[in-house]
Image (cartoon, rainbow, N blue to C red; front, side):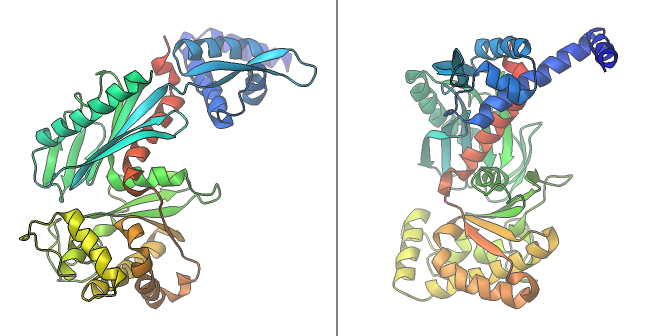
Length: 411
């Protein structure tokens, strides 16, 4: 055993590239131990050595790098056991944050999330983005971002990266929106350099529903490793979590529930198809069916949504029937999704969560009618995240990237 260990050490030390790779992996291991403990436990270096199965000397060296990079801080003093000598605790640096942002059809949003995944501050601003030039939208989002940057600076917070979520198919590598029908963007390259202070800052682009699914994942029970997140806004998106990982498929289109055909030959959809779920259960579709779709009176979409809720509260037609029809169509789509993806949990966000009490009866009846063998095992939940889901998910995903590769910020 001793000879084998010596041989392994010799092989590692003789290959400089391996030494660097091992140190990178060990930096991530130490940081993950600190992150997993939460900021209440305040692990000592000895604690970290035991949990990471690294030597105390290695942990001390790695922690020094993480301290220098500002990813962790020393805090308080505690004892290693009743008779142990006092030891300094280590936690994730609460002054390091990531900015999450979202562009949706009628609003822009931005927020700050710390390294533990906690949303510290956010702002949602009405903004008409349908068929607006991407440059114009990003200029407005940049102004919103700078307000949060200024607020962060006054609180001593440093922004390490950012993520942007949009309601469409995206290419994260090239920062390109491949198709976002409800924005009117196709093959749209995004200049994200103005959104954050440092050009080299870690930045990622997300589909809005996928980002929301990632945010929802942190709220699920540990054993809940598979679920479909359905985002209801003007459009309908889907984010699929399989075995605790976001599944997007080879082209990134998996989970697009809004464009499942519910009514063949039905109404024209923004995607170019006909009879998609979105044409019945999308926000604009529901408003139109409730006779609240016209904007001639100057009412904004938010005002018309408020009118919809008022009509539902009083049981007024055709609002009740419009939402019931949306629930029926959702039930059909969910029945197909449960069979195709072999999941039993579906989480609804956006206006679906707000409309739950009126949607659920028709949706459950439809699900039972179209998938009687699995309807009894289905769990239909509503997300509490509201309009912050996408920006939180985008930010937390970037936080995860940073925690997995802290060497990028070391040195």
